Image (cartoon, rainbow, N blue to C red; front, top):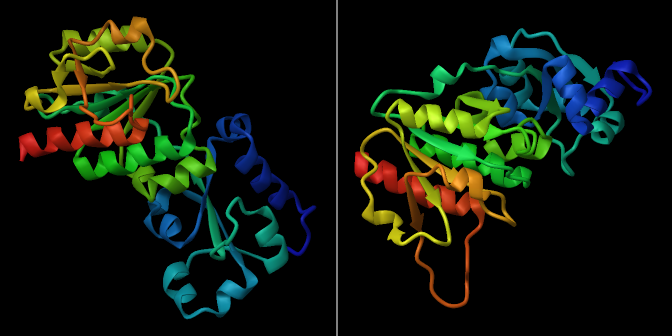
Length: 257
């Protein structure tokens, strides 16, 4: 049993939780909690750690089965976790990698294209609601918050394991190529003159969502085929990025159902 926070494995978990560079170097991320462990594809899981008290729970035998794991004292386990109330189990998971083709599905293509999203919770929520709305993938630029940030991972509620994604250095070029392949692009934009529910999303569709504070840059917004708006009352000028994305994705789902 690991009983010291100076243990090299514990130090490595802490580094993976805190530093995006370390996650990228090792190709691993930390998934905390029972749901995130249970839904992780078995072949992606590199190592499993459980708190000593977790083994006394009836559910532990069902979750762990015959899989190998490291036992950690409760104090050390709680100290290394990113959550305030750890559930007694975490695992190191290999990062999935997708080619851009994995995001496309012909006329059924439904994409989110993200520019410089900064809030981990927003990004994770977009993956989660995107899966619910049936999107085929997410394309994001490199200045979007790290997808494997622990807060992002928790917000996905397991969708990180199932929604294909690509991080690109050349967002504008990739959008242009998608358009050349028949994907119609829509920018959620304050200058939109068309209501979001007046458009036809039954063909290959991509929604462009920008930074929480600044929205889409002019260069990326200018690539959209159409600016659309979500009508609002009162003095509200814009919605949370994840909420805007959810409204658009579910309208596309409604039209295609």
